[in-house]
Length: 417
Ligand SMILES: *Cc1c(COP(=O)(O)O)cnc(C)c1O
Image 1 (spheres, protein in one colour):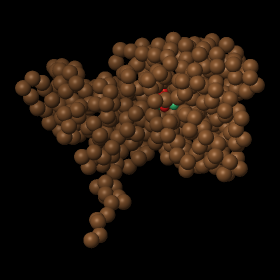
Image 2 (image 1 turned 60 degrees about the vertical axis):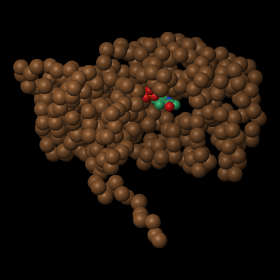
Image 3 (image 1 turned 60 degrees about the horizontal axis):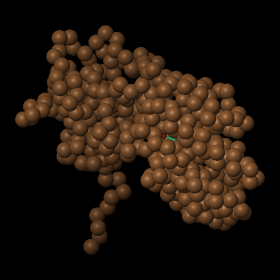
Image 4 (image 1 turned 90 degrees about the vertical axis):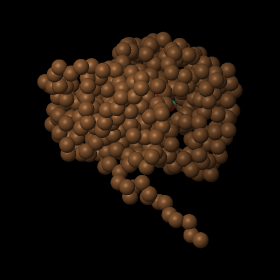
């Protein structure tokens, strides 16, 4: 459920007409509904109320400070994958004791930064990384709390580019090798094994792969505890899907039920790392139509947002619904490609998309753009990154300024002869 809806002919975000924001802020811009984020987070965390749990929001899905602050105020922790994300999470007020650090390529400076901050745990993705963490912690006379990220080899049945829990993926430690590496870790002086972790992919639309993954890692937990290596935290990752088109992902309550059942015990703390399900349908990208163009075989609607602003359609062939911000009556529907000004043939926001005829100057909204939208944006074609706006009730605020041309060349300099 989200708070973007038509009232009469006009698209609203909560109590604010989207057109009013466009008139003041200009286009394109991302628009986030604070009440939607709050609702998604609350429903998600309540679904797990039967067990001790920490919801570590996956910062990479949307890392705007205003989004992070909102989640921090609701009690969220964070799942981070870089020193930059750690910096953002801390600046937003997320307590270090609720931060887990994932990712296959943690640099020594980042490990140091996380130890300094006092994070909850590292999710370790390789033997070499384990050694790097141990030696960094030794230099700092610390003990690094950690889990191994285990690759349970479960098919999440999602897009190959966003599946992470298969043998062939770069993520995690094969479940067959995990036990040996845990023994190594348990023998190290400067690390402390506290958990086990997995994350099998993103945009999953069924619960079974989550259940299967958790059963497999709980098998490992049984063996570890049999060897005297206690496991306090079971981190089951993120990945719950959302509705972009006609998917029917499980409700958070069904998802929680599957996971709690697969855990088989209630005396461990569950860590969850949801990203998309919290913010995906809480954001849209608003853009203005520049031109209509009839190609030889297709109709193009050329808009002022492009693949550099929202790359999911180009990168994954992802579907995102496009709608007019003002619905005019008696408009014929057309099948069009919605494209941007970037000089690449893959620059499209939608393909073969049914859209009421919209013409120059009108506004369109790309729905479900709150996750992996702005954070994946770039300045390609020297296009300044767009503004981000947040609505709460009948108020809205720019939570990230549109970049200027000066921002484009910040830090650049001429070569001195
Ligand atoms: C990306 C990611 C997540 C979040 O995935 P969603 O599909 O957005 O829920 C969680 N954990 C890890 C380790 C990730 O890489």
